[in-house]
Image 1: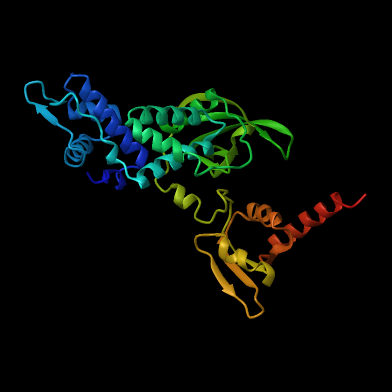
Image 2: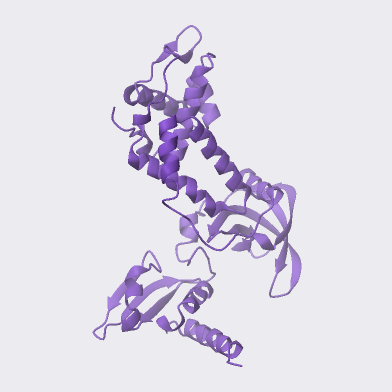
Length: 336
């Protein structure tokens, strides 16, 4: 039997399709004759998608699925059928393992536990030999990084629920620049993760612009019972078109030019600073990366991580900011 290919389409990601197939498998074993409509509702997809999943299970897994016209539902004509181990290729197992390990990127949020539970259920339905192969390669990829700041289940639930309902929220938010807490009413649009740090994109009621709220600084969330219509012009892609490292800035984007001296020119080719960047290699061996962005404050932080490996050529305001920050760092780290 060939390895299963139905999980490669644009219909959904690898794990979501496995979950549907395994859910259908479990439901067919109950003997309740579930309909395509019922399965679709349980899986959160269309009946058309379920019909396609069933056809692919029959064609590629040789699943003995039949339709009971009297009870208007599906069932297995052979109770001894099991999803064969050969349905998964080595590439499939590796993809599943990488997806499982990627859960670590959600540490600190209730989503991490939910995803782990999903993987446990998925793996429990796989043949024993497949589970053994999976466990043998589970340490091939490791996602590392700084430990995340925990986010309470209640806050996570309030934010995700409000985004789905399009309900305005009152945020009790800590503002470091003022060293005080302020109430902010926002239209919650989007949750963004960057290096295990979570942010809420919300449209403020006072300035009507889209702001970023760092979740650990949200001390309390209050529902308002008021709802809003999402702006038709808003999309994550448009919002971050000229952002940087998941951060967004106000105002028009500015042209940024960064010079890497010859001994560090390789960084210009190894690291992407922007999807629209251009790299120019100079005769002296240096390289200049240029792109547009309105998140200069985040670019400044990123540049400081490289120390003397990069020089800001443009804009002047960014060059001055880096100079000020570097001078301050030098003052703080003078030898005693």
